[in-house]
Amino acid sequence: MNGAEAVIADPGNNVVTSGTVTRYSTKCPFITGYTSKQGFPPDTDPTEGFFLINTDTGFQQLGLTESEWHKELLGMHWDTPTMHETHPTSH
Image 1 (cartoon, rainbow, N blue to C red):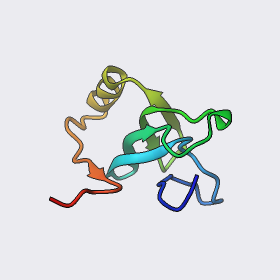
Image 2: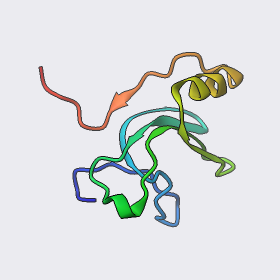
Image 3: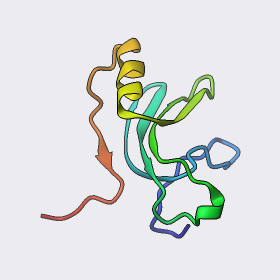
Image 4: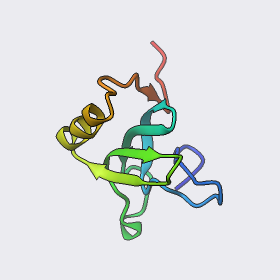
């Protein structure tokens, strides 16, 4: 990992997402997004997929498929998160 990768850490500075966060969205108390394996050595076993974190409870769901992710979001009445790119490209 280098300075170009984005991760999410807890208050103790422990990395919560075990992959590079490529896009994310927030809706208090939740953080959701997508992580990729890019930038992580294979031996670190990074998780790729969608994630959902409850910052109130610390509960984390990592490596969700898109269908699993949508199902969880619907259960929270969060239909379409507005995703932000961690490394937006200029047009």
